[in-house]
Length: 213
Image (cartoon, rainbow, N blue to C red; front, top):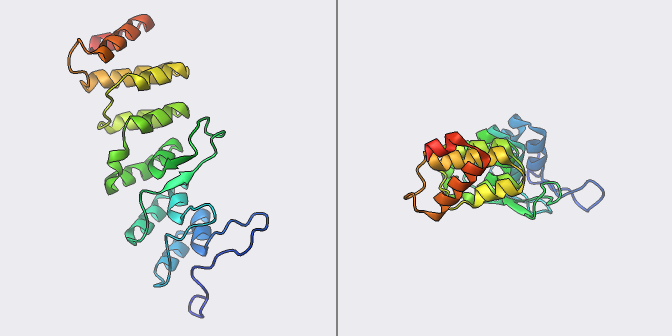
């Protein structure tokens, strides 16, 4: 059909129920048809970063759905924005956030292979207390543990620990505190954050954390 002049960037017209302005590339990506995605991207006139009515590109959805092979194909075109944001339902994610970076969203959804790839492609600067806080607030234990396992997360306050406890996530709080101790993120034993953490560890009976400190 493309050889006969079909529009490679065809978009659904109008707004009937179920219509959302997806291009052919959107549809192929969401369905997971890697071969068709490859075929479309090989077409000179294909616009891989074209967005739907919700300002979401195929790359946004590929990250959100954990389709690593398609994520790679799209990035290799050099025509997509890696630092896009995805609109989310705040009620579904139990948070006040209405948009998330693709890295955060993929992490919370448990698509860690995609996260690793995005980190390799220059998104490592986004691994910070903010993404950790969002993972905690969304109650994503696996995401928190994954972020800690990367080993480059810089935690400068006890805020993530406090946030975890306020949300009833005792195990997460313990994991973060242990990470802070093992990574020697405290400058000296007189640091207020360290004192707060030591007090917390004593109150909770976390002897192994105290030993690490």
